[in-house]
Image (cartoon, rainbow, N blue to C red):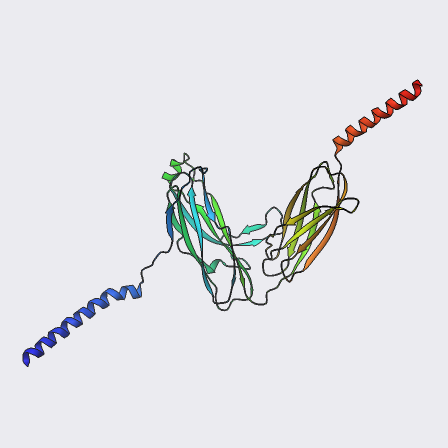
Length: 324
């Protein structure tokens, strides 16, 4: 009996020691969980590809999200610089502007009116790629529960971060930095403000020498979400006959900004006055704005040659009449 009791006590002691050891092993993992990285690096074939840059994809990510929702998207970076390169990712807000030549403005450390930067988290912020390697990086978009309906806009800016050795290997002692951005457009569900107007529709000039016509259409966004307008331009000649129809591909317009879209129309053998009518869908509630303009195509060289020929012909006729 006493022997059995001692064996039980011994077994209990072994059990307690094993339990204590398990607790010592598991506790750090619970308190400081090991991070499992989901990014992937792979080697790709760059045969026939120009050397000297890197590629970021995609350049634009659009999402509809609910308050409190969390979504993960991925971006990829391919090293085509011709050598091993360090990279880093910086998160910045961006906004639109009223300057046609500068439609997107990155805000650096500043927080935008429609800020997304605090809700964007790439899995890694620094990494190194050998030439011909591609990394795929998850980016978490985590929206707080108390967010208001509307648009949020941020970017993941990837830039080269060469060491002195890498710069020397590229044949320069100067640290040359290249930067590309993936733009995140997030719309929070709810009653957002959608309001826009066709601000301008015009041709580059009134008179053209040949049929290479450049149109521009400008949309002003007065709401709090980005819009994606699109449309069509119909062109008629002086007799009212339709001679052309151009699809105006969608383009995005940020809140509190004006964005201009340029449309090229190439058509040989144009002559005279033409009428162009733009019908543009604002990108919400199927509202369509319409505006009409006129332009002329007068091929001066052909007119000059034709005029000279006509003058010569008239001169010859007059000469013949006088001779007779």
